[in-house]
Image (cartoon, rainbow, N blue to C red; front, side, top):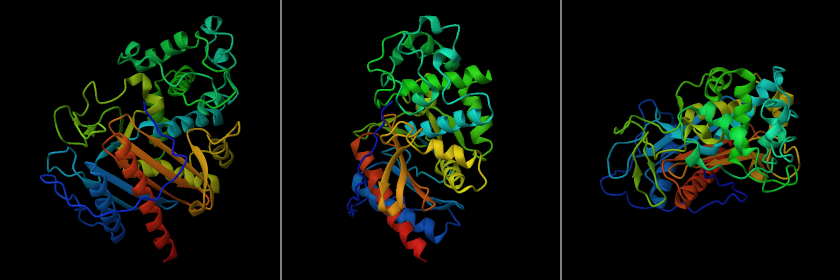
Length: 382
């Protein structure tokens, strides 16, 4: 799982470029689109052409919900099959904020503690844990302070039985000496989130995936989601992922995503509107408005617990356009890119997805984020 945490938000120049032959401009929106939706589609069209990505979707979200959304381009490069507002996008490591939210729900229910250690959670296996790993806490796992490496050897964990593989990761990976002393400093770790997912499964007796459906997606009325690659194998009924150099990768095949064990670290896909529903909750919660968690819990999720810039599933940085501290995360499985910026103090967020990986896709999401933030500024003044 690759993810890029963006320390600097650049406002890229938006240049005009001609449409790619045989792909069309992809500017059509569904019937009934609002003026805001059409404006967003036009902004995205220019950026898609500049950065030569197959397709791009973007949304502006406030505490009222998704207020403007657009999707332009094609599902697969070399075809003329357009993306739609019903299409699902791979979120990569933007899944982590969802996993942290799920664990927060279990904490509020009294079934888990932030300071619970891996030794407490897995007493039958803890005697074999490396001494430095036994006291690693839930809070450290979610804030990348566990000392664990970035990834595990995914070749060893490719079974379709995700809970079994996550438990095996606990039993095998926690016996190894950590690369750095737990709690000493920040080190981004997908493995830490895999182990957090195993804790969810230990506490509830259900898979992380089912818990996400029961406790997060269901209550937020998210209806169009899944885990792993999107679409029907061999069909072009959803956006295909594309490599950094633009080559399409068949949907839902063995090479289209990381194996199921990686779920809590980054395998959610959904429509951009459903992603928006999750983000709306994180805008409303800190204001004490109706949400799935207590106001005080969002404060925990949104604040780095050990200093630095990483909270629980969110990078926290200061931006003038957001009125101070804003939440950010980007995610990529190397074939898709998702980029989200959330401004709780101003009550809005922008979300962008591209069905391609690599730096060019990142730059497209960055430019689109800048354009959507500027556009929201004009809406807010009206």
